Image 1 (cartoon, each protein chain N blue to C red):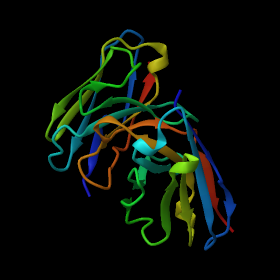
Image 2: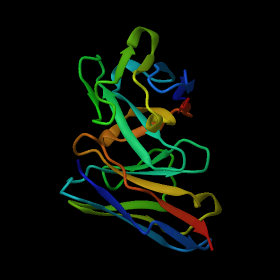
Image 3: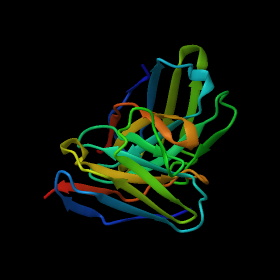
Amino acid sequence: DIQMTQSPSSLSASVGDRVTITCRASQSISSYLNWYQQKPGKAPKSLIYAASSLQSGVPSRFSGSGSGTDFTLTISSLQPEDFATYFCQQSYSTPYTFGQGTKLEIK
Amino acid sequence: QVQLVESGGGLVKPGGSLRLSCAASGFTFSDYYMSWIRQAPGKGLEWISYISTSGTTTYHADSVKGRFTISRDNAKNSLYLQMNSLRADDTAVYYCAREGRGLSSDYWGQGTLVTVSS
């Protein structure tokens, strides 16, 4: 199985900050990398697919980049509703494994 | 709008069985691969099963292989997960999800809680 490792595991930031979350795959996954946001008690929401493509309706302050083994999710200017847990997922080969999550908290 | 509504969760004893359902609406169900993904309490996400549009191709993670079976009924716009020989470590919220562009799970249901306990 492909292992996905996110860093950091948690992060404190303020409204308006620029934030970057990193995801590393244990082997090359080309651009088959997805990002999700999850708020407490809610289902995950898809943000980005294929490493850098924004899902419909997702604000443009979210962006993704990378290919191969190293990927990033960037939020350009944090908004109050962005405080949540973020997961990466590879869809290169089954099982489509997730990272352990990054909890983004208000500073 | 796309809607996925899971049902069938509950409390079951170890070794027992449960069948989860997911009712889909707002899109052409038969055009999409579908998946089940679970999340143990306070833990991360585990992708466990997917099924092709026609149902002829399925995949199950090693953790559930031989015990869980994914299926679908395109006439009823429904996805199912038959869970047998349940264990305590199967306790989780189970989500159904639509597989969209880039093989990402672009829409998720609200989840249904399965608790395996004596």
